[in-house]
Amino acid sequence: MNTTRLLLLMLLALCTCQPQENKPDIAKEKEAVHQVMQDFFTALETRNWDLLKSSSTSNFILIEDGLHWTNDSLIHAMDNKWANFDVRYKFNLIKTEVNASMAWMYYENNAMVSSPDTIFPIHWRESLIFHKVNGEWKLVLGHSTTIPKN
Image (cartoon, rainbow, N blue to C red; front, side, top):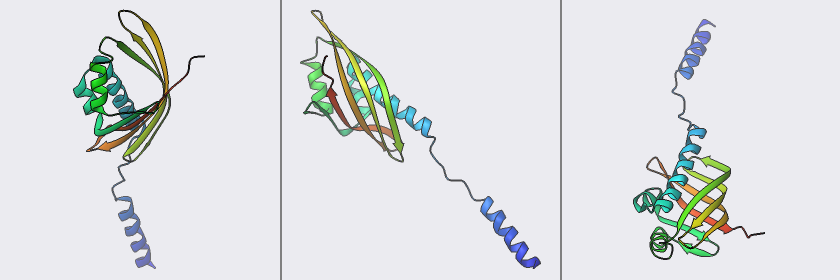
């Protein structure tokens, strides 16, 4: 009887001494994902192409109203077609989910676009998918739909 108690006590002690699993802090992971999204759009606003590329994977794809964009095609469009436009983004975050090495978010993007000749708003509903690469969150895929004017 004493041997059984001693064995149970030792087993209990061994179980409590096991290291706890390293569970990610979900709030911190969500903050990190939000920061990557902010970095990506800051890169578009400031035309900081190194920041754009560091916040996304090399095979990043954005589908916008049926158009297919890559990092290179976005950079080309911003440097050419949109060269005379200043775009400022403002976000209304709706939902962010993080699960191990994948995360996604859904939000509204309200941009104000200006040039020497005009100022106009653009509103989108967008979603982004992120993948954790070597411990860092990166954008993998984005989807954007323009919200029609009423």
